[in-house]
Length: 113
Length: 112
Image 1: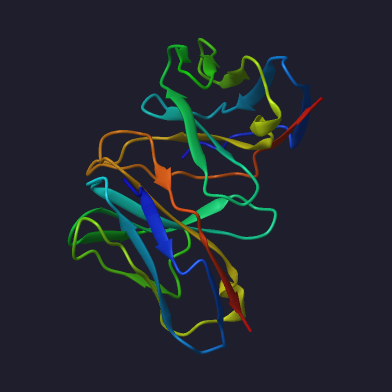
Image 2: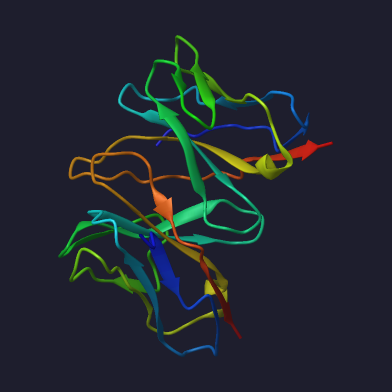
């Protein structure tokens, strides 16, 4: 699996957009970009994923550069409840199904008043 | 639906003891996996399964055994606990060819 590079920490004011960057310069053509978050020490929570097109769901938007070497997770209106560690992961679907998620140390996002 | 349920939530073991961490899901997911998370680190994959009767090793499988006799359950066995296995263990499940994994709330294991 390709490795990812994320800033260790970021701050964001409540109500503003939080833009979390991720570099994955060695990503392969069949690898997806996933984002998960972990609040306190709870189990990680899926946010969004994409292959090469930008994606949006009720939680966030994912912007992937044309060369797929980097991406940005956007939380459009961050709230205090979005304070968490955000993990950017690249992985492919295994031949028999499923995928092996490789978690790095992520970005600690702190949303403040 | 309960989602992914892990038991116990906390456990203290003595070195050399054995135990089984339980993981059950009620979403009929084929794919299940176990991760461990050490302080200040991301999660590391221990073992995974793509269906009943099929298991494979992840990044850090040594010291752990798994089996998958049913779709719902994927227990993780520690045969002889060591202090290095002190960690928080997470179980996850997903459909085989989808990408959203659901995680349990974790089991905090301390080996003394």
